[in-house]
Amino acid sequence: MNTRCPICGNDTFHEEFCCRDHLVSGKTFPLIKCSDCGFLMTDHPPQGDALDAYYKSDDYISHSDTRKGIMAKLYHVVRNYMILKKTRWVERYSDHAPHTLLDVGCGTGYFAGAMKQKGWQTTAIEKNDTARNFAHDHFHIDTFPSLDTFAVHPERAHTFEVITLWHVLEHLEGLNEVMEQLRRLLTDDGRLFIAVPNSASFDASVYKADWSAYDVPRHLWHFAPAHLRMLAGRHRFEIIAVKRMPFDVFYISLMSERNAGCRLWFLRGFGVGLCGMIASLFDKKKCSSLLYVCCENH
Image 1 (cartoon, rainbow, N blue to C red):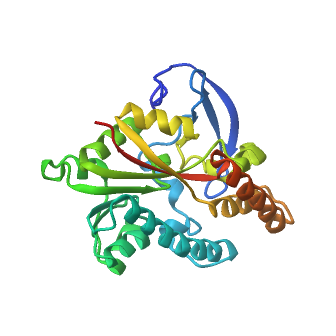
Image 2 (cartoon, rainbow, N blue to C red):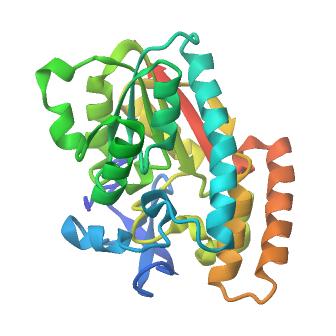
């Protein structure tokens, strides 16, 4: 990881707290905060192949498509509803007509498949072999393993009218390099959709180091709304809309309670989720996850 903050360029940090990896290793990882802009980062996460090992779990639902257990079942119910919401958002902010779309980090491909079914010319990026093969086999989507190698081809410059990252940007190494790649692939009048967990949310303030959306070490970056705006502006993007992703708070709160070993994890998690959902109705910045719709700032 860079020794400078990718948001403001500052080079001094302090440790905020440590978070535990509940999915694979049980190890703890420090989160550090930029002393200037307050951006949170996972300190010295594994890189490359070492980081890939932290995704190898049947419980990592976006890659495995497992339906075992109550959390997996809830995930699929909410995902089906959110796919409908996502397709409507994309159509609304791109004038409804089918266009070219790149879904970065498509997982098992359900959203990209839904857009293809609506007539969109859909391409996807997915690093995980199992998820990428599932997306290709089930939805017949052209799926590539790396944004780095995909973006360098000259013929792909400014060819996508919509680019989507649904809970993906927080996973990607080289944050500023990624933003420049996205800018290069997007058409001049295109739309960039970035959904990320909100570290300034109501539920993050409740759970602190136990907030499951920190998801170390898979999540490298932990965005509050101000930081996403600063990053977008740094790469000459303008945020034209911010949308709540209201049901994420329930999944994240339930996972946070279960990871903490609470005996009444379902009841307590649902209660916190309900409080968080209500809080976000009065203040969007309290929402557990937010979608940012961006266009180029000419």
